[in-house]
Image 1 (cartoon, rainbow, N blue to C red):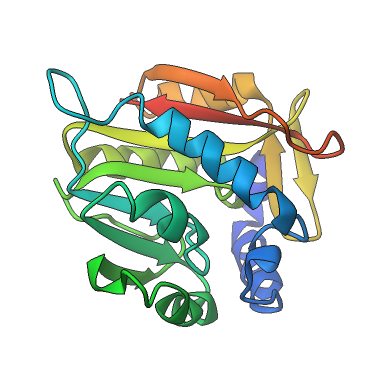
Image 2 (image 1 turned 60 degrees about the vertical axis):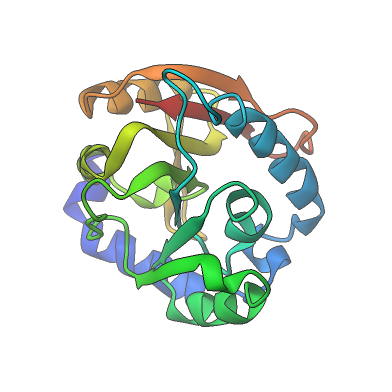
Length: 222
């Protein structure tokens, strides 16, 4: 991804420009695929519940972070039902403003709203049981993704978990000029996770998505 690194200011500003024009709705968050939201959330819940609960090695349920949170689709339906407090981070201020309305019911348990790109975001040390990173790693350069994952590690509580859920390409890095992102293949994602000093403790492919979109994989990291 050397080319992207050279032009990374443009890479990030183009992405910000794209999202500023997207409607602050579930359909907007999912690029017109709002119909897959329930399938996505049910798959994520089944995945996450493997790790939560009482007992040795289980992940706590005090606080979660929703990265690239948008209007709070994942916060509302996945994280708030499972965690006492949920923080949101997104680069688009309008989305976070809409999130305050979208999350009004149960909103007293929403912690902090951070308006920031993940390449610049420093999560609070030792705060989170789970950091959920969905459909946003393609907006980070390789180096920035590794750096961000390393910062996430420092912000985990004991037995904390980082989860990446994202599209994977069949081979190599596929750029998307429309939203200024990239789609990496699974081997490349694995390599970047390893570079960040993390191990994959569980991995699954999300089933029952439309055939025309890239495969989506969920990785639990510690």
